[in-house]
Length: 398
Image (tube, rainbow, N blue to C red; front, top):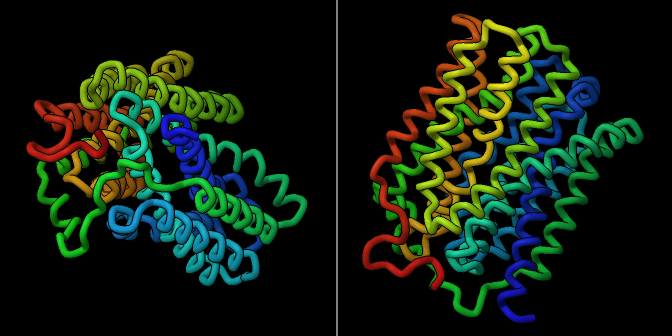
């Protein structure tokens, strides 16, 4: 198979690997009642248990990115997925919540390898004119993997309990690892891999453009998570039923996934990642600002404004991820994307807590206004930012 066709095989393998990790990063929320009963936890406790996955992910994204630049994406993803499978399988055999939490920290730390490395595979295999769509396909694996897990895990839990849930997730990681090992390889014209002696993290952190881009991503996560995590709560408080609010949340995620694909195609045709990103940030700021104004009014009007704004707030990630890889110093694409992703996950951990506390103390218009302000600040951060490879450096792939 020639390289132009084979790159789609590599993309499919990377997308499947990302979906496998999303299944436990996000899908476990679908079986929280069973987890509570199995481990003897209250609501706060089960939240901490699931949060243990992110606790393992955040500090390990950058080291995995450095490893991907140094050794390539296949060994990094295979090792990480096998590690995830082992940790998840171990969780199936424990009843102590502290032991389960420790194993889920390991699962998160291992799964971070896929977040860091699969993006590098897109950059090395796809030319710039197709890279936006390819990265968007990869990014849609997160909401789609979570959605499949949300549908599959409850009946698995009903049939076999919590051990069966973790066994199924472990098996999924094993299949993803085998797929990556079988089909992912370096392209014939792959860039030279980074050198450990060259201090790749310091080199990336010294790039002000990458830091500004990471800052914009951190700010855009605020409306993304206000819209995703708190949407049901704000609609219910407005008088909407639980089922209808949950249905609108599902619609928001599906529209967001479609938006990621649309933004990828748009950026390829425009020859720019940051141009579309600025437009998205501006519209998200306007949408959440309008939602803050109409929140005390009829819930149907609020939903009509907030659902499109929340969906658009889910759609931007691929643009930032691709831009980070394309801005990176030569041989540092995975490291740059990992730094950007770390900023996103830090904001994702803080936003629900801050947004919920603000809503409780000052009302939902204040939380929606915070989301609008963060998107506006992201737009200002992106103002005048130049994209593409550093001056004098070759792009990730010719």
